[in-house]
Amino acid sequence: MKRSAVWHLQDSDLHAYAGGGLAGPLLWSVEAHLGACDGCRARLTAAADPRLVDDGWARVDAALDAPVPGPVERLLMALGVPDHTARLLAATPALHLSWLVAVALTLATTATIARLADPVVFLAAAPLLPLAGVAASFGPGIDPTYEMALVAPMQSFRLLLLRCVAVVSANTVLCALASLALPGAGLGAAGWFLPSLALTVLTLLLAPRFGTVAAACAVGAGWACLVLAATGALFTVAGQSGTAIAVLLATAVLARRASAFDTSRLFPRATPRRFR
Image 1 (cartoon, rainbow, N blue to C red):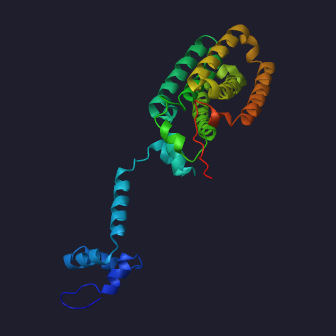
Image 2: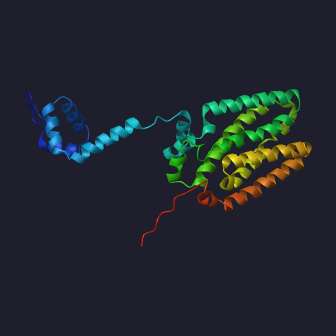
Image 3: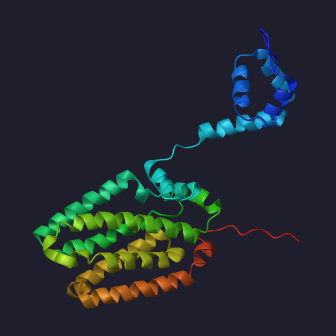
């Protein structure tokens, strides 16, 4: 740099700055001078590659237009989830605050009724709540990021599975808190957990053929009929053991049918075109 009453940047400094080759503290001095000197800024514009300027403005526009991460997205990224995955998960309607508040109020009401009437009311109703979240997890007209998810570098099965795990985890926490309102039921107050897993896995099995909404409705209706027909047996040790076996079997079948989520018309996945 030339040291005088009115000094300007040397050509070597300008070229180094334009090429990203300066480091502090010289970098900071050059930037401070450019902010106050019109002449040096004009020389920098002439020396720099025009594509660098365009790229810089493009990055500024992208930064300004980028959506601000919400609390769920920030929490997921804090837990180590990649930012693109966290964004797709946070878009799940069942993870929005309004949805979780509605689930919490429903559970509180159900637990109160069960405490006044019979704990079976809570045990039968709690497994149905995750189904609503699963139904809204993925699909055209339901998921606001459906089109983006189709072109994301992630298989449909993995995305839906991640969303279902997040939904079931959130509902499990809320159900566990609500079950504290049934102190007289003892360990039986947790009898909703295995049916909740079973209904979720069954919904996932049916989703590629019928879609998440129709699958959740069918499984929920089947659960209601089963509760009406065999309420006393479902929440016994034998009933819970049978439910656990059903969860394991359904999970094994689901793992074998994972590819169906990317070939189904309800979960389309573009196939790369091969060129000869």
